[in-house]
Image (cartoon, rainbow, N blue to C red; front, side, top):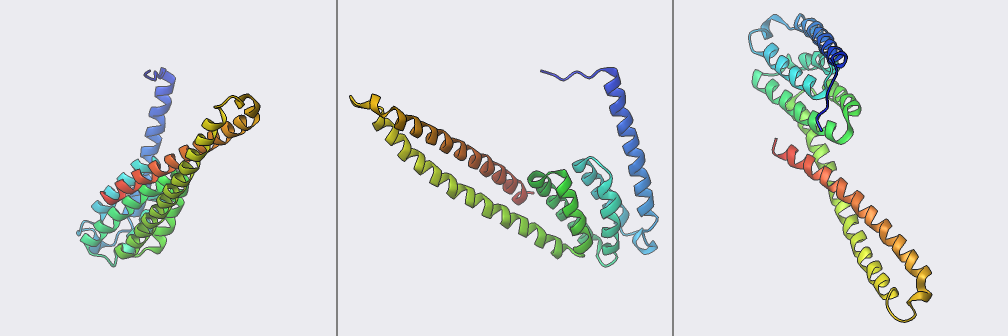
Length: 210
């Protein structure tokens, strides 16, 4: 079903976008004024504007541009134009991964720390490699746990099948109920592991092919 917005909601959304654009313009003009003259002709401003636009769209706010771009601009004094582009593209990959795994708020905080500490592309890549390695370990852990739960589920299901058969099955109603409860619990656990596996696999797939 399509979502229908009334006129007041549309006006409110438009006003919010207008205010956000004003804020972004103010923030952008602020850091643009601090760009050294020697960097104004090598594409630094253009690279950072593109980067800020992508990150602003990703997080839907001006916080990143206000806090992180001045830090990156400071680091860029020691980078070539090519390295600055590689640096910003790597940060964008990190931003997408952090957002998918941790959500906007924590991802934003992590990126603030990275913008402050990572002074070159190799430093940012280490953070990228670290999060990919962490996700791979988490994915492997959930795969192993899911396999373990699935094996235990098969055993419980067989016990339940045997408990429900035979002429004395009515005497084993208590055992049958307990086994049924254990089976449902195993299914819930497997479902949780499957969601985690799907999440981490999707993030890893996007990270490695970005």
